[in-house]
Image (cartoon, rainbow, N blue to C red):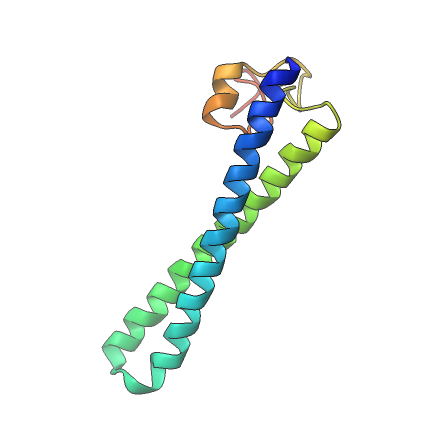
Length: 111
Ligand SMILES: [Zn+2]
């Protein structure tokens, strides 16, 4: 992979990272609102609120996981390992990385 390509992916990964961090702070404030409202709402809407909170927690868990994958990809860029399959060591197709810059494996090795 050329230096230019790596710089493009690094930029995209940093953007993705910033977006996730921002989403995380927005969702944190909405989760807090749910907790504050609980004393004043009825049973049904409280269940709705709890369900919403569960979904928010699940989304948060997924965001954390994605953030870790982005950090790992950025680390691979630093170590000149970015773009190579973690299983077979072959170059990952650039089209695949364009769709998913955090892809760890080539098409052949992915499940
Ligand atoms: Zn592979």
